[in-house]
Image 1 (cartoon, helix red, strand yellow):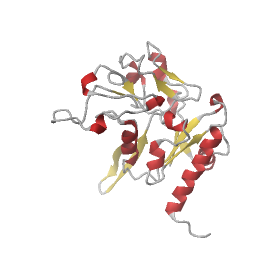
Image 2 (cartoon, helix red, strand yellow):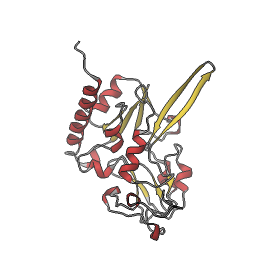
Image 3 (cartoon, rainbow, N blue to C red):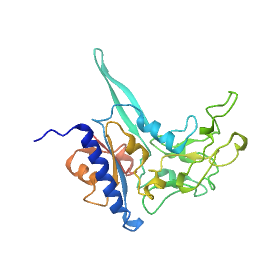
Image 4 (spheres, helix red, strand yellow):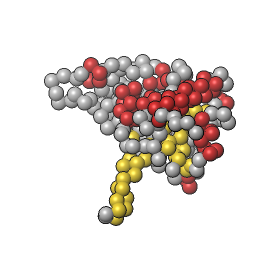
Amino acid sequence: MPYVPAVMEMENAIIRMMEDLERALQKPPSERRWGMVIDLTKCVACDACTVSCKAEKKTPPNVNYTVVIKEEVGTYPNVREVFLPRPCMQCEEPPCVDVCPVAATWQNEEGIVVIDYDVCIGCRYCITACPYGARTFDFGEFYGDGTPMIEPYETAPTFEYGEERVRSPEARHESPIGNVRKCNFCIERLHEGLLPACINDCIGRARYFGDLNDPDSLVSEMLRERYSFRLKEELGTKPKVFYLS
């Protein structure tokens, strides 16, 4: 078999996922089932996914939609570190939805759990209900707090959920400040034919994304050919984020 440079394999995976995405967008939304596959053998804990997400969503301090959990295992001298990237699991049976008293969070027809910032009252019941720690609260903090000025990148507009919003130190009572926030699979990018930011920027090509209802998609193929597991499957939440080990 001819040698295929790793960078070429990474580029081919992106092209394949873009083709899968284009095909999925031609179907009615209710026939799509977006899912993510994370290959733990390729994750190097570089945190590029976290940084990419923060740049895309312009999230404030302590609001991270995707993180890489790091743990040291073993007994000296046989010690190693293991990594677990953790976005929102986008559960098919999301416990966070049932506890919301104002129906501010729900599962849309594509299976993505979303939040309406204009309805959310900030009660944070959903944070308690999420067994994956995937939700955080926007307390209105800025990286420039306590310094002479807030840098322009902190007040640049974002287009989360396809709607332009601006966080401002002068308006700390306006959404999304005071709301619960989380990963939404970059739904606003998907509808423009773009992959989620963390998928694009993973330097180890450990993350894959596509339509689980499409048997020809790369994610479906990987789940057929590799052993996979989901976090806390015993809870019956049916996550749509799968891990390969």
